[in-house]
Image (tube, rainbow, N blue to C red; front, top):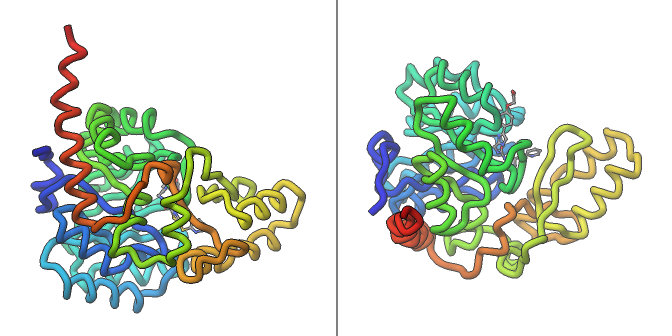
Length: 314
Ligand code: TUI
């Protein structure tokens, strides 16, 4: 069995986080992952505080294990959601798409373990200084908002920049990815795309089908021009957006094009207007299974791979 310091720090069985996917990672999915021994994480995305509070209550009604809330820092509701995490006494907060410095003191005083996503060495150093519990190093293979660096170059650099446990994210889908992450110095992994196929993941059947049918070159990055690069499946919407982006559409119109696109993908499976966020590893997601099975399976796969690494050393 693979154990690391992060398991003791958080009181979880397996060092596996479920990524905080906006519109997707609700209380039910988070509870299923936590009940499976990993860390389930509710995504706040762009949702207001009352929604996040509701999802925390749902998760807590389904599990006694620790759960996390992911705060998307570009959300207009980030501040009120930050308060809700304190009021509802969630065990862990993860952050993404920005700098959470101004919340760190409050969270720490409330006894919340803070695990920010960092996409650079500078941010890793700052978060270490401000008292983060651990760091998530998320490479650009991931779905959604992506940083510049890939997982294989980001993780070791973040590990060198901090004495905190590092969780690797981006492109990790099975036991091979888990083993590789540990080889790079990580003590845990975060997976998003793989959990899209979980029975407990409440996305439109069309979304699930697209993930299960995806092939190696199925994702693309759009949104660079406006400074918010986002990885999604290469659908009609993504192609149209890219055409508009490089065809000189004014910024405001381009922004409007994306409004509501995540919801249309998740709730309606709308191919023309929906934005189906996905990591590059979609092609490696082969079957539907329970969240608990996913957690257990990837960790059981990783174990013989890590043990077998000795065969390379003569
Ligand atoms: O946040 C994510 N992935 C996301 S957020 C999201 S919702 C969204 N909707 C519309 C436009 C954009 C996003 C969908 N997917 N991943 C974590 C992540 N954080 N990746 C990269 C970063 C990051 C980037 C810059 C973290 C810190 C950072 O710091 C910048 C600074 O302020 O110095």
